[in-house]
Length: 234
Image (cartoon, rainbow, N blue to C red; front, side, top):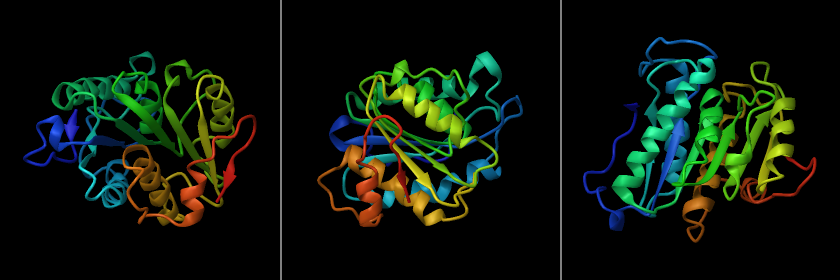
């Protein structure tokens, strides 16, 4: 897995790192073409990671923005999920039992959800996720989960996300946020998308720090875990 973000020079021992956030980019349903740093899906995660880093400043947490080896999910290979599992093994080996939060967009959200069963993961968020019918949810047991989807997304299907929310709520608590007029690249209302990611990471890793990256509405929305059909519209 290629790195889109680097660790601080002293971030080699658990006493210097209080948590890790991994921000995962999107891709395609099928492609073995290698990723590169200039692809739009990869670049789109730069401001997301920056917002998370800002929200966690002073907390001792590390934010990583890795790059998948190839652009596609590739059926049963689930290529990006395998990449995340490998990365999570490395994080656990380097930092021990610190909380790890996965935040993914589109295909990266599917990879994050799939990889959330790794024992290092404590929380996972999917932004405009690609969660086709039948995507497994049992691996989310014991994890904190947030899924946010825009009403104007024409690439991945909000209805499939809300169906996944219902299944996931059978095994864990899930926050569901509907972004009014939100599109798939998260360019419309970009600040809101960034705030959702940042506040989720902050509340999962450094809940005692003050929220500086979101409004009161966002801070409240990421804590709602009501069951059944409930979701928050922002």
